[in-house]
Image (cartoon, rainbow, N blue to C red; front, side, top):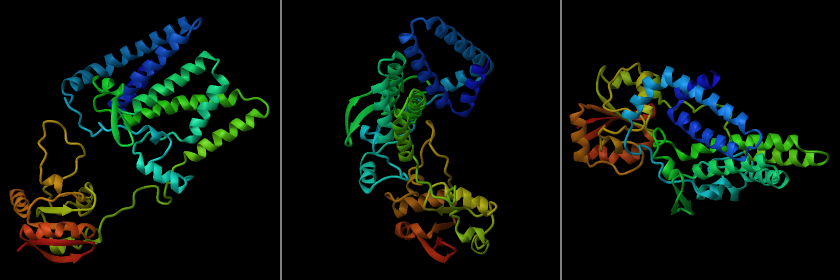
Length: 360
């Protein structure tokens, strides 16, 4: 019963999480059944209980929701997850950590990915392998961790920025519910295995070996502490004063359609809400565009620092959407100003961290 409740909770959180948990939970159980001897009947009993949990969850939740999800699932990959993580990223973090030298940061920037384990954890795994290798369960645990890391590498082995050979993830991602899975997230299952390794390795220590193992684990923990800016614990509010102090009311008519060009894609929706929806917008940020929905080629180039539409393309797009004013955040004005002028718009006023533009 509790297995069924857990499965329903996983399903409610994320289809990807449910699918990957099912796959790697199954791999862990298969490895356990292979190495088991006298305990194999107990494992079969556990497997049966898990199967009953899936049956209960399926009868209650999965049948009404799983079948429609499979029937309407996208046929192609929606996320840009073809490029895998470089194996060297296991050692060199892409993000900042509390303990890191300049050389470590430089190497991390060179090998992109999200599968950082760190030298400390690698040392723990090596120590565990040396001291516990004679135990079948220890070898099985290390095999499971290795399998998780292998799948987390992605569908193709990348070394030094170059694609080499296909990896098992290229097969796994063809399964239902796993097509859109981001490979690097699979590393969390390796972390679960590492947690068991650390717990059992410390528990088995005796004499002076206790302090050696505790020291290695503490070093591993220290190397894994991310550098979080505190305070704040959240992203700072970057809403320009133009929207917070009410300046927009003097330059924008209520209900007017306004194109807002920010530094980051999702900000205009927050700024519109701050202004109590005083104005309309011709676009919005909804994350990944699903299959079957045609992407607007102009809208996609109105964010970031990439190639902009021509003046004629932009003016046609603005007229089609009924845009009569443009608000540009000051930090990106230099990039967009030539395109706005080419589209026949002129600067009205620069105020409160933005500039307001209208047709001339």
